Image 1 (cartoon, rainbow, N blue to C red):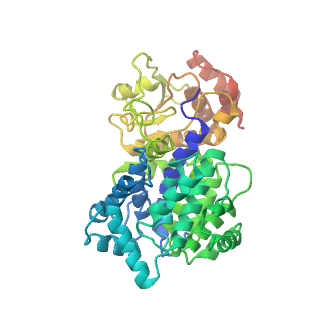
Image 2 (image 1 turned 45 degrees about the horizontal axis):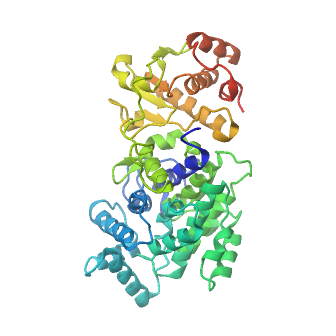
Image 3 (image 1 turned 120 degrees about the vertical axis):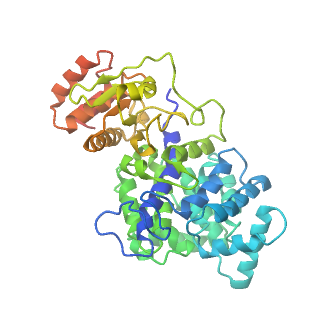
Length: 481
């Protein structure tokens, strides 16, 4: 049995999808929409580095770091830690901050008492004074709540509202967070997109209004909802971006189509794309997030793609479990021999096992493509930069259910190899034992650079006699899905 079944892949996609959407939207926030495809070029209101996420994901990580410890997000202890995280972020990590959020955190800092109570007091005071606390700042950070109690929808709803109300008292802000968190929970546990299904969890006073707002957005152009600083319109814009690009084929490419549409919604592009990315990641999983994005994405507090996966999966599993993936320090095993064999078509690609991660200097490689689960200390491998070590979510079982996006992942891994080679790098591609996943990706790479499938198969079988040169992974690698 794989340690990474499909619900785990989907959970892993929540923060990763959000962060990629965020970084994709950063360059276009309150600016002209992209000409052609949106890219992670940085800039924006930070200004940000290329691939850097903004306050949307930064604040979400304040929640995620608490959720990953297994704390009940409704509890005073957890809410205190989230609130303290927000305050520390404002002082030491915030690159840009929403007006309402800055107001609340600044005022709360002048009050006495427990952190979550100070924030709520400041939020309620602002709402009483202005009636204007329905910005999108609570919705943008709610994603991780959706996988904290995956089997309990009522607990998910209560936690979503509790975290939202730390800074956003307006019931509409809480409602939007409840609806989106529940949609993420359903996407991860059931593999479907459903926003209307959470209506019974919101206040009866606004239930029919929400039904109308959701139906209005379903299938509509996201740009129709460009006044998206308001939580209702932000939710509509994200939902429109997702539903208007859904071809109903279950393709991993929906992630890219949906996020491109989210950026084109305009105005608060990073927030809308972050909101949409979390739900798309929940539905399709981390395996559907393209490597060109995962290679670039990073941000406060010094995290990258692998760290986001660890936080998401730990949250989904009910907290970190010492000595087990994804929180284990290393997945290496000294009993597994290294391989280190040159690809028979391209000798600058080295085919290996997980043990070859400790031989990078000996093998003279300067980039790594990993096809198996890694520990926290395994990536980046010694001597590698984070940009030059990319993971892929690929299981070695032949059942279609274990690799729902197999053709996409093989294509994506091959694309990463071709990109590294175009940069002049010598690349190690490895899985755990070097018998199934490594040969399959090596085969797809050979076919993609123009080698006839039959010839590529023969050459790889000769070079890797221990390889399982048949089965679904092998066939799809050679001939496509």
